Amino acid sequence: MAGARRQIFVVFAGFMLVERFGFEVHEMAWLLLVNLLLNTVLAPFAGRAVGYFGERSTLAFEYLGLVGVFLAYGGIYYFGWGLSLAILLFVLDHLFFSLALALKTYFQKIADPADIASSAAVAFTINHIAAVFLPVALGFFWLYSPAGVFVIAAAMAFASLVLALMIPRHPRSGCETIFSPAAAIS
Image 1: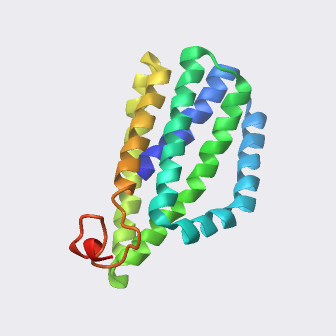
Image 2: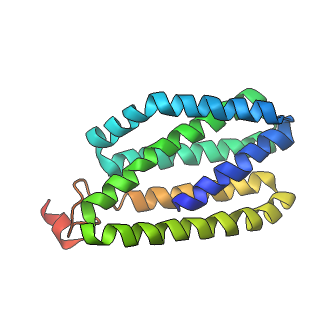
């Protein structure tokens, strides 16, 4: 789900700015530079948020925010909302992505250290499958309904939210989800 969401941001959020608002290369470069600088400054706060609130709450906040961001992206097309909102959403979308580090800390807590490298390789491969498949499939759908692409993205973010809510408050090996027998004890 994370790879799918990332591809929608990378491909379609930028494409929306170019297609809908006529952004040029230098404007996109500046916007990406602003995102980079903001993430550099705010990333430590994202790390502290994961440490303080935990993976479940941090990911739930990220995915709930992404549902709103993607629905608002769709609203830009459907309702004709303006450029300022589009830029704000683009920056917020990128900032929310920095909270995805909670997935890595969750994985480190539940995984056997001997399995981390192979599992990370599989996750990397699956993300690359999404990177190839989604832009093509949703690109065809974009021709029919640009707003619809963002509604699909919001549905993916909602599915991620549901999955994040299955993370226990204190994840560890043997207590990977709220459905794990050890989760009832903690």
